[in-house]
Length: 84
Image 1 (cartoon, rainbow, N blue to C red):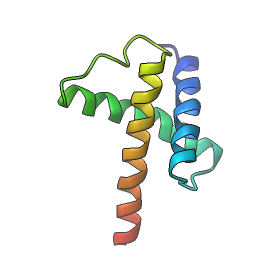
Image 2 (cartoon, rainbow, N blue to C red):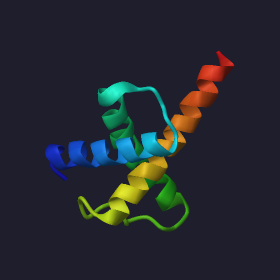
Image 3 (cartoon, one colour):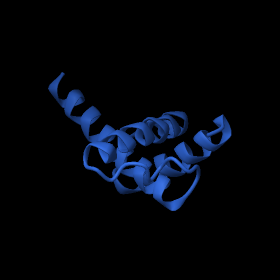
Image 4 (cartoon, rainbow, N blue to C red):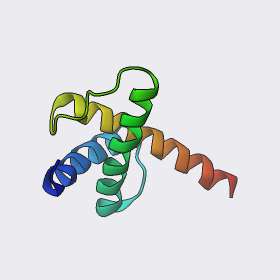
């Protein structure tokens, strides 16, 4: 995928995840959480045997995968923040 598609996917997924669970990352942080969420979601999807859904570029499946990954990231960062 091109960089522009990653940024668009990250923005959409980050803002959707932020609407579900507010994260307080700001605009750039929300986009980055969506991009990192795409990687996390893809990794978890592969572990569960449902991988390959987010490979084709900007699609509903890739957005859902990235949103789930961004939510996982947000919950993990929340646990780390509470532990410190």
